[in-house]
Length: 113
Length: 115
Image (cartoon, rainbow over all chains, first blue to last red):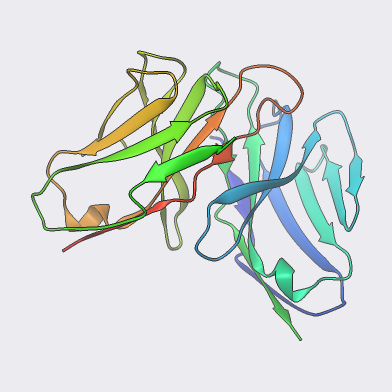
């Protein structure tokens, strides 16, 4: 079945790089997403990558996609305390027309001063 | 644009009581979703709608009903609340086409406690 897995916790020091990893199972996925959830708030789209891309860079964020291994990563350069949040990986399977997303459980990123 | 709004933000119910959560979006999105978020469980889809007048079941629909009488509103009802429905409920919407059309826009959430 469809599944998205990610590690639950990551702790980094301020100024270091953070790398959050995600694996997925559906090879037909068209879009893969990273959403960010700050404490007490809803989820916000951080970035996404189309399945025909290997890499996408947006300021401090770099997304790497390895389709062969079905592995997605999010790198945050120069991590700041404001980056402390839960990061969700999600995939959008190509099948079906209801556009449901398959969600990981989220990685809680703690940034220590 | 206000985006996606949810009413109420917080609610405490007694077991057996009923309530309706309201989600409204002003982006003219066709698709709308209701999720619940529980610790260690991530986001689970309760019900969704692909257009006005249509609804469909998600992963965990039992104990909930929904209605989409107007395109901009998606209502989630609990007919007889149970403690297992204590959760944070999120509504989301998305457009049907265009670049990034798979992006879901989320509301701020409703924190529901059932005692």
